[in-house]
Structure formats: C-alpha cells, structure tokens
Image 1: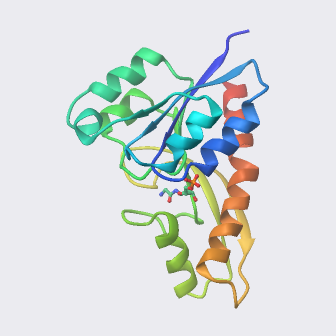
Image 2: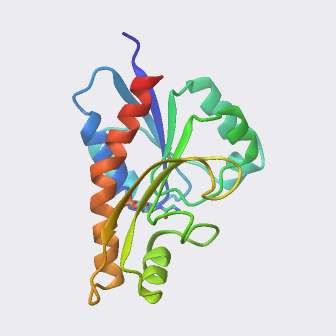
Amino acid sequence: MKTKKIILFASGSGSNVENIANYFKLRKDVTICCVLTNKSDAKVIERCNRLEINALFFNRQAFSKSDFILNMLQSLEPDLIVLAGFLWKIPEAITNAFPKQIINIHPALLPKYGGKGMYGMNVHNAVKKQKETETGITIHYVNAQYDEGAIIKQAKASIANNDTAEDIASKVHQLEYEYFPKVIDEILSKQ
Ligand code: GAR
C-alpha cells in the first residue's frame, strides 16, 4: 500500500492543521509531509513543533517571484495540497502544475463572501453586518482565481439574531473541524 502524502499551507493559528493532523495521526496510509507558512510568527509553527510535524516558512520571493516553492512541491510529489487558513493567492505556475490537487477551505457559503480580502474575521464581520440567517463552509478546488474553483462540499450553520461575529466564527470552525478531514480522506481514497 502506497502512503498518500499531504502538504498543508497555513497562515495563522492552525487549528485546522491540528485537527487534520489528529484525524490522520494513527493512519499508516496517509502522512503529512510538512506545513508551509508565509508568516514567520504564525501560531501554526508552535502547533507543528508540538505535533512533531515539519513546518517551513517561506517568503514572497520563494512563493511567487521564483520557482522555489513550485520546485519544492514538485520534488515532494504530494497526492494533495491543502490550504488550511492560507491567505496568499496561489500563483498560476503552481495551480497549473497541480490541477485538481489543491483544495481550500473558505469560511462562508461561496460564491457569497469570497474574493480578495475575504478571509477569517473579515468574512464573519461581513456576514453579521448583512444580517444573514445562515453561514457555513465551502471546500473547493483551487484555480488561478480567488475562491472560484469547483465546489466539493458545503455545510451550513444557522445564525441567531444575537450571535456576534465571534459566535459565527466559532460555528464555522466547528463545521470545518467536522468536515475538512473527512473530505480530504475521501479525495485521497478516490485517487
Ligand atoms: C479558517 O476559518 C479558514 O476557513 C479560513 O481561515 C481560518 C483559519 O483558521 N480561511 C480563509 O479565510 C481563506 N480565505 P485556523 O488557522 O484556526 O485553522
């Protein structure tokens, strides 16, 4: 049995990274090669140290002004690249090299509340401001346009009148923890 390899990208806290790592911890058929981050002080690095996962920091030069990260990804031959709270747009050279092999999680029901600047609390504040009665998550393939790749899975949560943006964020995170690892598992099992 060939072990499937995942590479994760994250920019912030990394609670999804930790949840995914825990989900696959006892699995011999799936391994997390490394977590790549564009923030040298991201909390995800601390989590990776605790979880004994390799974490690597890269800058813009390595990511989009040269082929450094592209070459690294190609040499690692991942089965799936997972954006788990990653905030930079993926360069076309990378999306072209890994068609249908990069997935992202977005903390809203796309196509609503997507696009540049729509990440993390910005999304939940906008959802609250619009007095939406529901929100959710979208897991989708990544192409060269922000938040526009084919949708793989959406899940919804209802919003009460008195929910704060933080309450909304917490409901969305619960959905992410429940569905993201399962969707990754399903995609890997079909490959
Ligand atoms: C998650 O809610 C994820 O959906 C969101 O960032 C958060 C990261 O949380 N991603 C985006 O907004 C991408 N546009 P985490 O660092 O605790 O996993």
